Image (cartoon, rainbow over all chains, first blue to last red; front, side):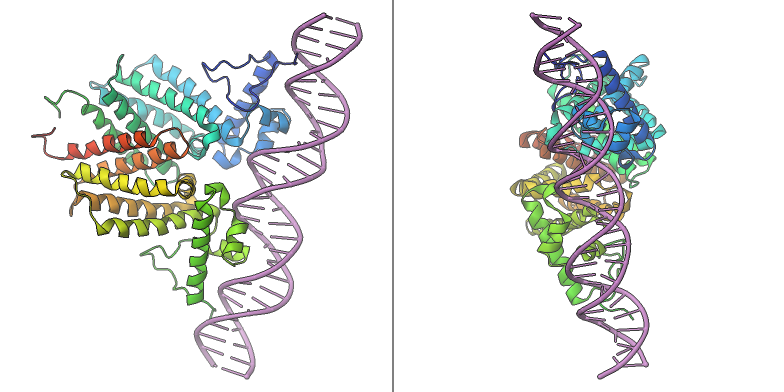
Length: 215
Length: 215
DNA sequence: ATCAAGTCTGAAACTTGTTCTAGATTACCG
DNA sequence: CGGTAATCTAGAACAAGTTTCAGACTTGAT
């Protein structure tokens, strides 16, 4: 039998559900050091500053090992994002949004997330760029991020049993959220503009309410 | 005085309005060969298949010259997209969408564009990935693409003087369009799903109509 | 026709993501 | 404890984007 159990040799990270072979304590520690180094480097310079050799050195791991844990730079950054998202979800869970309508609450939640990203614009850059640049080989991980985002939005809406129509609206909100972030990160949209875009798309949620009394 | 007039040394491509020094005939020809080679290579393999050395060779231009015309691979692909978008806009202009409402016409137009992209999925991959991966140094070019897209959507709406509310909806539609394309290209959403997303977001346009009689 | 300035070419060099290899380590089974 | 299969390490090697440079070529002006 192996030593240090085997790490997901080229597919998924432990993520959440997906049963992956349990990691040794030392392996878990390595993984954590790597993610930490990744976030740290991303925190300064953004996407470009996360250089695999540096991540390896910072986390005291050989380059080959880094690649065994995360099969590419994009995988690494998407995993970093998963990590941060979990953290965010926990944080947001502590005090739910106060808005009257579902649309307001979603917009409020997204703006809160946006403010968190503004505090670490470089980190945001690295994560979002990785997310949108990811090709098919990263689909499972990106999907996981997407599910997590959906969960956050549904939480904000406060619905236990969303209709298909509402789920469709949530999809569009996510699209807008990602794309708006990109325009902000690349300097083509101001913070105010992103706010407007979010508020605009959240009005879609209104459309899922009964027609009477809309507006 | 110079020879062959100077090419946009590291900023914008002739694009459209932005006054850039006129190109010699031979320079124009080079530029065209490069864009053609780029689209051709992108047409097979997508983003990864567009290798700068190959583009240079295919278009019979030295590598250094290629970089003089397009300061990076992303610049090149975004320019390729501009090129294709112009073509698309001309094509779409020929027979305008037939839908009853503005929302229907926009959805119809975007689906038509989507079908065009489906015919060349690799090309679509290269262009869209470049677009979303572009950093600040490509902002002017990406903005140009965005303006062109906006123009296409406004055309479809058939409005001569859109309200700010309508412009906000158009922004969100563009966000959704780009992001939905990405999910499709990376295999995380089906064609049918993209269609639904587009139709969903287009309902936002309805919100910009007077409240009476909505639905 | 000649000249000066800017362009193009071909090739090498450099950077950073990714892969590969040989040998040292580690985990677990018997 | 000893064996052994998998993991980790250090470092070389490879690939593709980008930069650099010397020299040949064009262009427009005199």
